[in-house]
Image 1 (cartoon, rainbow, N blue to C red):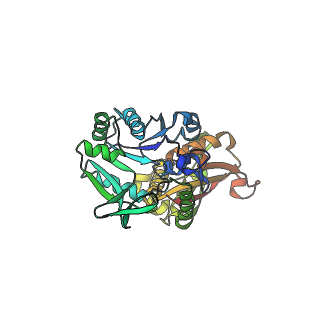
Image 2: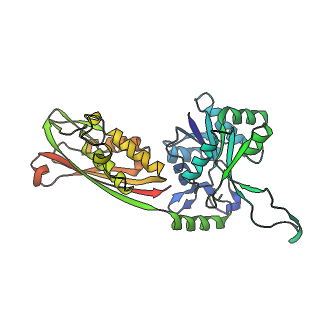
Length: 375
């Protein structure tokens, strides 16, 4: 089952006050749009819909994280542009999310996806609990029953073929994708929304979002350390890169000392044990295994537990081989395995000034630090 996410951010957001469109504004150190995109990291396909005037900026900032498409004159047209782009890609389900909802949680996304197992469409909502008035000219002119009323949120999820057909059948659009789905006769399941999943509409909403981020963000840091001795060979694997060398590294798996240290840093941040506990060397199935298996497992566990990687830093300690020429490639490989942007991963090296076992060139040591934040 292939699932895609469409993040709609083609509006101008004039109600949010003067300045650049709200999706590009800073929110506690990251742009609103960067936070919205991060919530869907790990999806097979992410399509970002931007205003035509913002496409160059989008390519520069998010070109490696999402497929970009220009929006239309209305929200419905913008969504349809993204749906048409995905046709034929093998996507069976799609989530459509407002780029101005940067605080959507992984748990909410999972609820919407789960509801699609038994319904052709699903969307989060919150029951209306306040009294409702009608008003005009600054005075109350009547009341409205709140029975059966809900506040709609996103992401709204659909079986792909059904929502594409709904958009094609109703090119005039609607208030949201649920309205078009209902016009097409689709039953839309309601799942529990979240108060923190607010849509940034007015200037004061940014202050509220920053308060939520300050109160709710869970930050965790883990450290990893690993050592492997040299043995006979003609190369070493370091942070996923095959580096020519006059010797190899001794280990039960491929002995990638840098990747092992980083993997243990992720497990440590989650208090989830270490490689030796989860992939014991006594188990023959891991003999000679590629260390990317371990790192990918740790990164998936990070996402499953509702976190994202803020940054990772790996230091290799050795006299030889020289790491500098390979450091950027190593960082890119690690980022790819963990499904994060390369700018969140650093690989560097140092020597031990000819002291100790690394100084005597008996082996290589690696240290790693990983910081996780709640998604």
